[in-house]
Length: 252
Image (cartoon, rainbow, N blue to C red; front, side, top):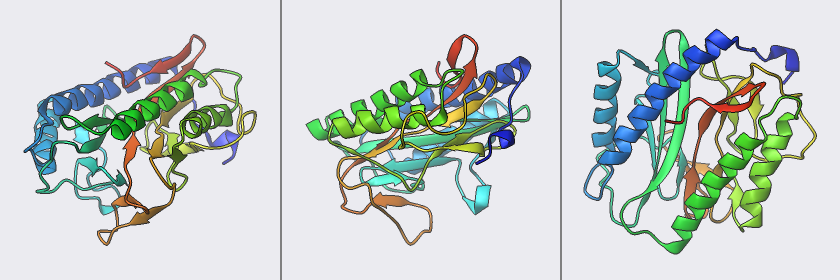
């Protein structure tokens, strides 16, 4: 991706992006409070619809390339793009919720993985490592660095812990479009890629698998699952690169 294709945001635009991403964060918080064994992922979809309507905001995903829901809800071996359904969440499951919002001409995007009750030690560690990989990526989102400094920090943290990084999906720039340049891989060599500049806004979203990095796509055409059926976790924040360091727009 050419560096000149990346759209830099003004300070006013970044503050608008902050407001949109706060809506994302608030909705995710409301959903986290509703996640429990016995609930269905469609219950969460309905809550999301209500929360967005109350804030006069629009879901970013619904209708995007004909995706039919506001949320992506991925359970256990589902990596990303799991569809809300009548599936009942059970004790021991892990659930990734990806939420996107459009408001005031801009998009916000974030994701979180959480436990349903007591989960396995491996599941706990996978979630902690994936969230830790995101935090390491955020810390590298600094003026003067290179894009792949972010990627390499995510990859090394995951692989040092014995997990694998999904390469079929990547993070992305975000702003007036849901997906803008540049793509932000969760793998690569530090010191490579475009130079990071003030005003870039990136959605960093490591997807980490307990086993193989390979994925399959289910017959619904959307849901990505691990090829070996083992667990996967996904965390995401939208981050602005500023002269004062990374500004996590989607954090409460």
